[in-house]
Each structure stands twice: as C-alpha cells, then as structure tokens.
Amino acid sequence: MVHLTVHSAEEALGRDVVSRLRGASTATWTDSHPHAPPQNCDAAAFVGHGPPEPRAIHDLLRAGKHVLVGTDARPARDILETLFDTARQANTCLAVVNPDRYLPSRQLIRQQLDAGKLGDPVLVRMHRWEPAAPHAASESPALPEPLVRDLDLALWLLGKPTDRVYAVEQRAGDLPCGRFLQVHLGCAGGGMALVDYADALPPGAGYQSLSVIGTAGAAYADDHSNMQLVYDGGHPRAVRTDEGTTYVAAMVQAFVAQLDAGGDPPGSVTSWQTVWGLADAVSRSLETGQAIAPGGI
Image (cartoon, rainbow, N blue to C red; front, side):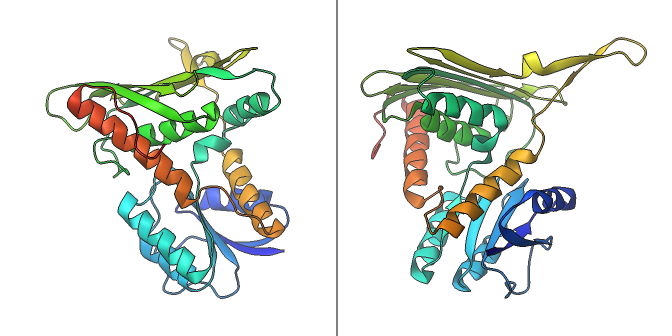
C-alpha cells in the first residue's frame, strides 16, 4: 500500500480527493510551505489551482518521496527541468501531469479512440475562451499557461508526431490580456489540430469545446450543450453543468496505481520536452509569421 500525502491549498478539494482514493493510506497536507517533508509517507500529490512551491517538491524528492504535480499551473520550465534532475539523482519519481487529460469528457473521448471506434484521428479542434485576467508564468513566456495545457492535450489525442506548426495572434493594444491566438498543428502522415485561445471575455465564466473527428466517427465535448436554464425570477439564466472535481481524484488514483504496480507514472521529462518543443515552435511562428518545424518532435 502506498502511503500518500495530498497537498492542496483548497482544503475541500484535498479532503474530497482523500475520501475517493483506494489502495492508499492518505492524509491531507495543506501547508504550502512545509518545514520538512513528512516522514510517514512514500509519495505526495499536489493538486488544485496554482503552481506548487518548488522548494517543497525538491525537499520531498531529496527525502526519497515520489511526487505528483497535478495542478492546473506548473512551475516554470527551467525549474521543472531542475526538479526532474533532482528526481533522477534521488532515484525517485516526479510525475508532472496535465489534469485536463483526466476530465471525464476527455477520458471518454480517449477511450473511444483507444477502442478504435473513431478510427484514426484526423482533426482535433479546441476552443478555450476565458475572461481577462493576469496569467501565471508558463513554460513559454509568450504563451498563456492554459494554451500550453491544450497543446499537450492535442498531442495526447492525436497520438502522432507534429511536423508543422503555424500560429497567428491578435492583441488588444499592449495589454497583457485581450489576446486571441490560433495554432494549427500538422501531423506527419496526415491529421491536424486547430487550437484557439482567447482571454478577452467579460468577467465571469469561460467557454471550452473539443471536437475529435476520426476516419470512422467523431466525438464532441462542448460547454454550450451543458448549459441549463434556471428560472429564479427576472430573466432566465444559463448555468453550466461542469465536470466537477472527481477527475482530480482519478488522476491521483492513477498515480497511486502505477506506484503500487511498480510502473512509471505518466508525466515524464521526455513527454514535457515534446510539449515544450511544440510551445517553442508556436512562439517562433508568432515571431516570424512562418510555419515552423518543431525541433525534436
């Protein structure tokens, strides 16, 4: 049995994850800056919003603990590369996982692909539109963090190398927000992805959609179809039925299961180097206005 410590700055989320785990002895850990790694655990999982404290990850790895980083924002690329080196030197596992992969809708689409029900994926189409807000630091300074996560998701769903990247952008003046980016990924041997990101919506809820079209079928996940009309006086409101937080527990459960089985959890430095290479190609395409061949992909 894996003795796991779950860290989340959101106590309710941490407790929910702990209550859903199987095959692990768990305890919540809510201090963002622990004075010392807990001695009675084999592994730790960071979940929720915002990047975890790099020093906490470093101390856990050096103490021989396996670490899952499953937050919606990660430490900067150079810091993560150093932490991966620390894990290798300490002979421990550092798994950096994009939590969007574990959303129920994304998992269902991936299961349909793996079962061959959609055939070979030929088009992945993603929208992510958000209200204007400052962004956390991302692996590529030119790109918003959510777009980097979507690039990872596109690669995961396509399941094939990308050999061309073309990106365009419009900005609202010199503001750090008010951006619209559109990224086209071309795959060797056929297939492509079109990913767009905007952060110019008014304050409030955002919008996401995902379409995967294959040679034998298609699957869709769209916030628009998950809106419910609410009549509570005045004009009716449209309220989105979201995917909850159970996906966070599913992500941590997969990490525990891999450790328990003695396997290597996903989220290795190699997989992120591929995503970082793709993000660099997007940045170069934005700078040059040209299609770019990603290096090392």
